[in-house]
Length: 170
Image (cartoon, rainbow, N blue to C red; front, side, top):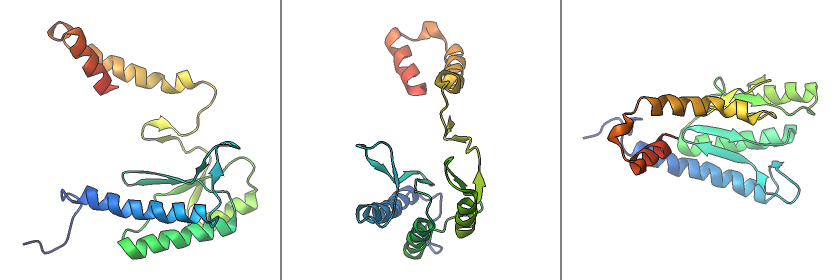
């Protein structure tokens, strides 16, 4: 008989987490549709980018306005109230574009209670900011794949087997 509720190792946990994350995603999408939140547009005719969710990580892409930050904080509070999942602002940080004034950066950081970073470094093993030299940025992936493939016994696998294994690793 369960007595403490669902824990992180429970087989149902990932599914419940996805349901709750979907609710957060819908809250954000609805706010974007009714122009309550101002998000980033990739290009003039292109789509609006508001957020990306992956497992228990979230990335939000907002225009740097104080009002925008207050609105996303209300959404995150509503998410917390409904789900019981709180955002750990100590593990979170903010990255600003080049044209955001220093005073506004400071005010937004205070609103969220987060630190600003100048280099968000890597996310899921890939650089978050791509420079001109994409080949250099992705070279380590090529090296890791070569290292894994080098340890295989090539004579034990057919060409098709090697191909399937390479695609699985890559």
